[in-house]
Image (cartoon, rainbow, N blue to C red):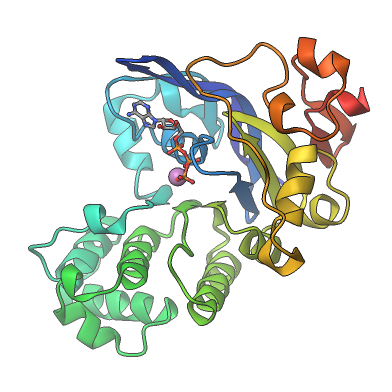
Length: 314
Ligand SMILES: Nc1ncnc2c1ncn2[C@@H]1O[C@H](COP(=O)(O)OP(=O)(O)OP(=O)(O)O)[C@@H](O)[C@H]1O
Ligand code: NI
Protein backbone atom coordinates (compact mmCIF):
# COMPACT_ATOMS: atom_id res chain seq x y z
CA UNK A 1 0.00 0.00 0.00
CA UNK A 2 1.11 3.51 -0.81
CA UNK A 3 2.10 5.80 2.07
CA UNK A 4 -0.17 8.81 2.40
CA UNK A 5 1.22 10.34 5.57
CA UNK A 6 4.68 9.80 7.01
CA UNK A 7 5.41 11.30 10.39
CA UNK A 8 9.12 11.32 11.22
CA UNK A 9 10.66 12.16 14.62
CA UNK A 10 7.82 14.50 15.46
CA UNK A 11 8.22 16.49 18.67
CA UNK A 12 5.72 19.08 19.86
CA UNK A 13 6.29 21.09 22.99
CA UNK A 14 4.58 24.09 24.55
CA UNK A 15 6.26 26.91 26.39
CA UNK A 16 4.18 27.49 29.48
CA UNK A 17 4.54 29.45 32.71
CA UNK A 18 5.38 26.24 34.55
CA UNK A 19 8.03 25.14 32.06
CA UNK A 20 8.26 23.30 28.79
CA UNK A 21 5.40 20.80 28.24
CA UNK A 22 6.66 17.89 26.10
CA UNK A 23 3.34 16.77 24.67
CA UNK A 24 4.63 14.71 21.71
CA UNK A 25 8.07 13.12 21.85
CA UNK A 26 9.83 11.64 18.86
CA UNK A 27 6.81 10.08 17.18
CA UNK A 28 7.12 8.05 13.98
CA UNK A 29 3.95 6.94 12.25
CA UNK A 30 2.85 5.95 8.74
CA UNK A 31 -0.66 6.06 7.36
CA UNK A 32 -1.37 4.31 4.08
CA UNK A 33 -4.18 5.07 1.67
CA UNK A 34 -7.54 3.66 2.79
CA UNK A 35 -6.09 2.64 6.14
CA UNK A 36 -7.94 3.26 9.40
CA UNK A 37 -5.40 3.96 12.13
CA UNK A 38 -6.27 4.34 15.82
CA UNK A 39 -4.39 6.43 18.36
CA UNK A 40 -5.24 5.37 21.90
CA UNK A 41 -4.08 6.28 25.40
CA UNK A 42 -5.11 7.93 28.64
CA UNK A 43 -6.22 11.52 28.94
CA UNK A 44 -3.40 14.06 28.56
CA UNK A 45 -0.95 11.69 26.85
CA UNK A 46 -0.68 13.86 23.72
CA UNK A 47 -3.16 12.31 21.27
CA UNK A 48 -4.97 15.51 20.30
CA UNK A 49 -1.73 17.49 20.12
CA UNK A 50 -0.32 14.87 17.75
CA UNK A 51 -3.45 15.08 15.56
CA UNK A 52 -3.40 18.88 15.58
CA UNK A 53 0.33 18.99 14.82
CA UNK A 54 -0.37 17.28 11.49
CA UNK A 55 -2.28 20.36 10.34
CA UNK A 56 -0.35 22.90 12.42
CA UNK A 57 -3.57 23.70 14.27
CA UNK A 58 -1.84 24.69 17.48
CA UNK A 59 -1.53 27.92 19.48
CA UNK A 60 1.52 30.17 19.18
CA UNK A 61 3.31 28.74 22.22
CA UNK A 62 3.67 25.40 20.39
CA UNK A 63 6.94 24.34 18.78
CA UNK A 64 6.79 21.48 16.27
CA UNK A 65 9.92 19.76 14.92
CA UNK A 66 10.47 16.73 12.71
CA UNK A 67 8.84 15.89 9.38
CA UNK A 68 5.20 15.39 8.40
CA UNK A 69 5.20 14.20 4.81
CA UNK A 70 1.77 14.28 3.23
CA UNK A 71 1.75 12.78 -0.26
CA UNK A 72 5.52 13.24 -0.13
CA UNK A 73 5.48 16.94 0.82
CA UNK A 74 6.49 18.23 4.27
CA UNK A 75 3.55 20.02 5.88
CA UNK A 76 5.88 21.74 8.34
CA UNK A 77 7.66 23.44 5.42
CA UNK A 78 4.55 24.48 3.48
CA UNK A 79 3.69 28.12 2.84
CA UNK A 80 0.46 29.52 4.29
CA UNK A 81 -1.15 29.16 0.87
CA UNK A 82 -0.09 25.54 0.44
CA UNK A 83 -1.23 24.73 3.97
CA UNK A 84 -4.62 26.31 3.31
CA UNK A 85 -5.03 24.09 0.27
CA UNK A 86 -4.40 21.02 2.42
CA UNK A 87 -6.52 21.94 5.44
CA UNK A 88 -10.13 21.01 5.08
CA UNK A 89 -9.63 19.86 1.48
CA UNK A 90 -6.96 17.14 1.31
CA UNK A 91 -6.98 16.55 5.07
CA UNK A 92 -10.13 17.08 7.11
CA UNK A 93 -10.04 17.45 10.86
CA UNK A 94 -12.99 16.72 13.12
CA UNK A 95 -12.10 18.20 16.48
CA UNK A 96 -12.90 17.10 20.00
CA UNK A 97 -14.98 20.19 20.84
CA UNK A 98 -17.62 20.47 18.11
CA UNK A 99 -19.39 23.26 20.01
CA UNK A 100 -16.44 25.58 19.47
CA UNK A 101 -15.94 24.71 15.81
CA UNK A 102 -19.44 25.59 14.57
CA UNK A 103 -20.63 29.17 14.26
CA UNK A 104 -23.56 29.50 16.72
CA UNK A 105 -25.08 32.36 14.69
CA UNK A 106 -25.39 30.44 11.42
CA UNK A 107 -27.79 27.64 10.59
CA UNK A 108 -26.21 24.20 10.17
CA UNK A 109 -27.32 24.08 6.55
CA UNK A 110 -25.63 27.39 5.69
CA UNK A 111 -22.37 26.18 7.24
CA UNK A 112 -22.38 22.81 5.48
CA UNK A 113 -23.35 24.36 2.12
CA UNK A 114 -20.55 26.89 2.50
CA UNK A 115 -17.97 24.15 2.96
CA UNK A 116 -19.42 22.17 0.02
CA UNK A 117 -19.24 25.32 -2.11
CA UNK A 118 -15.58 25.92 -1.20
CA UNK A 119 -14.69 22.34 -2.05
CA UNK A 120 -16.76 21.66 -5.14
CA UNK A 121 -17.75 23.83 -8.07
CA UNK A 122 -21.50 23.36 -7.77
CA UNK A 123 -24.61 25.49 -8.12
CA UNK A 124 -26.45 26.55 -4.97
CA UNK A 125 -29.12 23.93 -5.61
CA UNK A 126 -26.50 21.20 -6.06
CA UNK A 127 -24.68 22.34 -2.91
CA UNK A 128 -27.92 21.98 -1.00
CA UNK A 129 -28.52 18.49 -2.36
CA UNK A 130 -24.93 17.40 -1.61
CA UNK A 131 -25.26 18.77 1.95
CA UNK A 132 -28.47 16.85 2.53
CA UNK A 133 -26.89 13.68 1.09
CA UNK A 134 -23.88 14.05 3.38
CA UNK A 135 -26.13 14.45 6.41
CA UNK A 136 -28.05 11.32 5.56
CA UNK A 137 -24.80 9.36 4.99
CA UNK A 138 -23.92 10.52 8.50
CA UNK A 139 -27.02 8.88 9.90
CA UNK A 140 -29.47 11.78 10.23
CA UNK A 141 -32.97 10.49 9.48
CA UNK A 142 -34.30 14.01 8.84
CA UNK A 143 -31.42 15.84 7.19
CA UNK A 144 -33.59 18.69 5.86
CA UNK A 145 -34.78 19.58 9.36
CA UNK A 146 -31.16 19.60 10.59
CA UNK A 147 -30.23 22.06 7.82
CA UNK A 148 -32.76 24.55 9.22
CA UNK A 149 -31.61 24.29 12.81
CA UNK A 150 -28.88 26.21 14.63
CA UNK A 151 -25.93 24.30 16.18
CA UNK A 152 -27.22 24.98 19.70
CA UNK A 153 -30.39 23.05 18.93
CA UNK A 154 -28.34 19.87 18.44
CA UNK A 155 -26.74 17.48 20.92
CA UNK A 156 -22.94 17.16 21.12
CA UNK A 157 -22.94 13.99 19.05
CA UNK A 158 -25.14 15.58 16.38
CA UNK A 159 -22.88 18.63 16.20
CA UNK A 160 -19.94 16.34 15.67
CA UNK A 161 -21.74 14.66 12.77
CA UNK A 162 -22.53 18.06 11.23
CA UNK A 163 -18.82 18.83 11.47
CA UNK A 164 -18.03 15.45 9.95
CA UNK A 165 -20.32 16.32 7.00
CA UNK A 166 -18.37 19.56 6.54
CA UNK A 167 -15.06 17.72 6.76
CA UNK A 168 -16.14 15.10 4.27
CA UNK A 169 -17.53 17.61 1.77
CA UNK A 170 -14.12 18.06 0.15
CA UNK A 171 -13.63 14.30 -0.26
CA UNK A 172 -10.32 14.47 1.62
CA UNK A 173 -7.70 11.75 1.32
CA UNK A 174 -7.15 11.84 5.09
CA UNK A 175 -9.68 12.40 7.83
CA UNK A 176 -8.47 13.02 11.38
CA UNK A 177 -11.28 12.42 13.87
CA UNK A 178 -10.66 13.35 17.50
CA UNK A 179 -12.91 11.34 19.85
CA UNK A 180 -15.70 10.74 17.31
CA UNK A 181 -17.63 8.54 19.78
CA UNK A 182 -17.34 10.77 22.82
CA UNK A 183 -20.62 10.94 24.72
CA UNK A 184 -22.45 8.64 22.29
CA UNK A 185 -24.56 5.62 23.27
CA UNK A 186 -23.97 2.17 21.76
CA UNK A 187 -26.39 2.69 18.85
CA UNK A 188 -24.84 6.00 17.83
CA UNK A 189 -21.36 4.48 18.19
CA UNK A 190 -22.31 1.77 15.74
CA UNK A 191 -23.59 4.46 13.38
CA UNK A 192 -20.26 6.28 13.55
CA UNK A 193 -18.45 3.01 12.77
CA UNK A 194 -20.73 2.31 9.81
CA UNK A 195 -20.34 5.86 8.52
CA UNK A 196 -16.56 5.90 8.71
CA UNK A 197 -16.36 2.48 7.04
CA UNK A 198 -18.73 3.51 4.27
CA UNK A 199 -16.83 6.74 3.74
CA UNK A 200 -13.43 5.01 3.45
CA UNK A 201 -14.85 2.33 1.16
CA UNK A 202 -16.62 4.73 -1.17
CA UNK A 203 -14.02 7.50 -1.31
CA UNK A 204 -10.75 5.70 -0.47
CA UNK A 205 -10.10 8.17 2.35
CA UNK A 206 -7.69 7.11 5.12
CA UNK A 207 -8.67 7.89 8.72
CA UNK A 208 -6.75 8.65 11.90
CA UNK A 209 -9.02 8.04 14.87
CA UNK A 210 -8.09 9.47 18.24
CA UNK A 211 -9.97 7.75 21.03
CA UNK A 212 -10.12 6.53 24.64
CA UNK A 213 -12.54 3.86 23.56
CA UNK A 214 -10.61 0.60 23.17
CA UNK A 215 -13.65 -1.37 22.12
CA UNK A 216 -14.45 1.12 19.36
CA UNK A 217 -10.81 1.15 18.21
CA UNK A 218 -10.67 -2.65 18.12
CA UNK A 219 -13.75 -2.85 15.91
CA UNK A 220 -12.96 -0.14 13.40
CA UNK A 221 -9.18 0.18 13.07
CA UNK A 222 -6.72 -1.71 10.88
CA UNK A 223 -3.72 -0.69 12.95
CA UNK A 224 -3.28 0.98 16.32
CA UNK A 225 -0.67 3.14 18.00
CA UNK A 226 -0.70 3.28 21.80
CA UNK A 227 0.53 6.51 23.35
CA UNK A 228 1.85 7.00 26.85
CA UNK A 229 3.24 10.29 28.25
CA UNK A 230 3.92 11.74 24.80
CA UNK A 231 5.51 8.62 23.31
CA UNK A 232 4.29 5.78 21.13
CA UNK A 233 4.80 2.68 23.29
CA UNK A 234 3.31 0.02 21.02
CA UNK A 235 2.08 -0.22 17.43
CA UNK A 236 0.74 -3.04 15.36
CA UNK A 237 -2.25 -4.41 13.53
CA UNK A 238 -5.41 -4.64 15.55
CA UNK A 239 -5.59 -8.44 15.95
CA UNK A 240 -1.98 -8.69 17.10
CA UNK A 241 -2.32 -5.88 19.59
CA UNK A 242 -5.50 -7.10 21.21
CA UNK A 243 -4.63 -10.81 21.18
CA UNK A 244 -0.97 -10.47 22.05
CA UNK A 245 -0.27 -7.11 23.72
CA UNK A 246 3.36 -6.76 24.72
CA UNK A 247 3.65 -3.45 26.56
CA UNK A 248 2.61 -3.69 30.23
CA UNK A 249 0.61 -0.48 29.73
CA UNK A 250 -1.46 -1.93 26.88
CA UNK A 251 -1.93 -5.16 28.87
CA UNK A 252 -3.28 -3.09 31.77
CA UNK A 253 -5.53 -1.03 29.46
CA UNK A 254 -7.05 -4.16 27.97
CA UNK A 255 -7.59 -5.62 31.46
CA UNK A 256 -9.23 -2.41 32.64
CA UNK A 257 -11.93 -2.49 29.94
CA UNK A 258 -15.35 -2.67 31.58
CA UNK A 259 -16.14 -6.00 29.87
CA UNK A 260 -13.05 -7.58 31.47
CA UNK A 261 -13.95 -6.40 35.00
CA UNK A 262 -12.80 -3.08 36.32
CA UNK A 263 -9.11 -3.56 36.75
CA UNK A 264 -8.15 0.07 37.00
CA UNK A 265 -4.54 0.95 36.48
CA UNK A 266 -2.91 2.31 39.65
CA UNK A 267 -0.95 5.54 39.88
CA UNK A 268 -0.79 8.54 37.57
CA UNK A 269 1.10 9.46 34.43
CA UNK A 270 4.41 11.27 34.93
CA UNK A 271 4.36 15.02 34.32
CA UNK A 272 5.13 16.09 30.75
CA UNK A 273 7.15 18.97 32.20
CA UNK A 274 9.62 16.93 34.26
CA UNK A 275 10.00 13.81 32.20
CA UNK A 276 12.07 11.04 33.76
CA UNK A 277 15.14 9.87 31.85
CA UNK A 278 14.24 6.21 32.44
CA UNK A 279 11.12 4.33 31.31
CA UNK A 280 8.12 6.66 31.60
CA UNK A 281 5.86 3.80 32.71
CA UNK A 282 8.29 2.59 35.42
CA UNK A 283 6.29 3.81 38.46
CA UNK A 284 3.12 2.02 37.38
CA UNK A 285 4.56 -1.11 35.82
CA UNK A 286 4.00 -4.47 37.46
CA UNK A 287 6.86 -5.98 35.44
CA UNK A 288 9.46 -3.29 36.18
CA UNK A 289 13.00 -4.60 36.68
CA UNK A 290 16.20 -2.87 37.82
CA UNK A 291 17.18 -1.90 34.28
CA UNK A 292 13.88 -0.02 33.84
CA UNK A 293 14.87 2.37 36.61
CA UNK A 294 17.98 3.46 34.72
CA UNK A 295 17.22 3.18 31.03
CA UNK A 296 14.82 4.72 28.59
CA UNK A 297 13.58 2.03 26.18
CA UNK A 298 13.69 2.50 22.40
CA UNK A 299 10.86 1.36 20.17
CA UNK A 300 11.82 -2.23 19.43
CA UNK A 301 10.73 -4.04 16.26
CA UNK A 302 9.31 -7.46 17.14
CA UNK A 303 8.29 -7.95 13.51
CA UNK A 304 7.35 -5.62 10.64
CA UNK A 305 3.81 -5.29 12.01
CA UNK A 306 4.53 -5.06 15.73
CA UNK A 307 6.73 -2.63 17.68
CA UNK A 308 7.06 -2.12 21.42
CA UNK A 309 8.91 0.27 23.73
CA UNK A 310 9.77 -1.96 26.68
CA UNK A 311 13.04 -3.27 28.11
CA UNK A 312 11.41 -6.64 28.88
CA UNK A 313 11.89 -7.61 25.23
CA UNK A 314 15.43 -6.33 24.64
N1 LIG B 1 -1.57 25.25 24.47
C1 LIG B 1 -1.04 24.44 25.39
N2 LIG B 1 -0.12 24.93 26.29
C2 LIG B 1 0.45 24.13 27.21
N3 LIG B 1 0.17 22.80 27.33
C3 LIG B 1 -0.73 22.27 26.48
C4 LIG B 1 -1.38 23.05 25.46
N4 LIG B 1 -2.22 22.24 24.77
C5 LIG B 1 -2.10 21.02 25.31
N5 LIG B 1 -1.21 21.03 26.34
C6 LIG B 1 -0.79 19.87 27.15
O1 LIG B 1 -0.34 18.85 26.31
C7 LIG B 1 -0.63 17.57 26.87
C8 LIG B 1 -1.31 16.68 25.86
O2 LIG B 1 -2.63 17.16 25.63
P1 LIG B 1 -3.65 16.45 24.61
O3 LIG B 1 -4.82 17.35 24.49
O4 LIG B 1 -2.94 16.06 23.38
O5 LIG B 1 -4.06 15.14 25.41
P2 LIG B 1 -5.03 13.96 24.90
O6 LIG B 1 -4.24 12.71 24.89
O7 LIG B 1 -5.69 14.36 23.65
O8 LIG B 1 -6.07 13.89 26.11
P3 LIG B 1 -7.68 13.70 26.07
O9 LIG B 1 -7.87 12.24 25.88
O10 LIG B 1 -8.10 14.17 27.40
O11 LIG B 1 -8.21 14.52 24.95
C9 LIG B 1 -1.49 17.84 28.11
O12 LIG B 1 -0.66 17.74 29.25
C10 LIG B 1 -1.96 19.26 27.93
O13 LIG B 1 -2.14 19.89 29.15
NI1 NI C 1 -7.62 14.84 23.18
